[in-house]
Length: 151
Image (cartoon, rainbow, N blue to C red; front, side):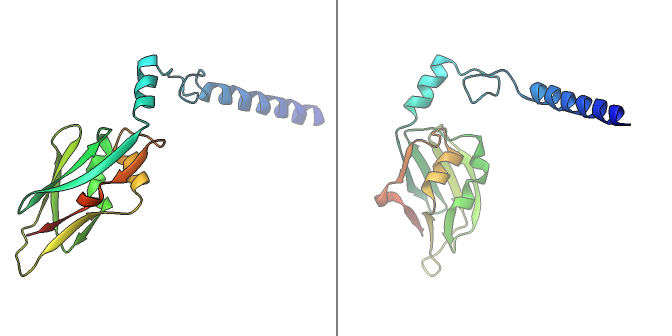
């Protein structure tokens, strides 16, 4: 019985090691995922590790833009509206109009019922989530263009 238990233990350890080796990819330039980082991509990553600025600009009575300078928007922008403070504006949608500009549409406001949209909160998390700037960039909001008011 001891011999069978010992053999079972050896087999179990061998399987654990084999599965561990299979799960790990080849060592690469991106933390070991198996996909090496090319020199061009590495240069782009270093280049984007600079200062990245966000600005809000009113475009019409029902729209404004969010501009990023120093980086590009990424595929996560579908959740962008969650990072804005709406008082009491009703968000109706947004679209990526270029690599650096997103146009946001809101419900129409009147002089009797104005509203404001403000970029706030953890701007580092916002930038790292929605742009290709990464975690090493310095993110900031243009203080003169931090919010837009309607009408």
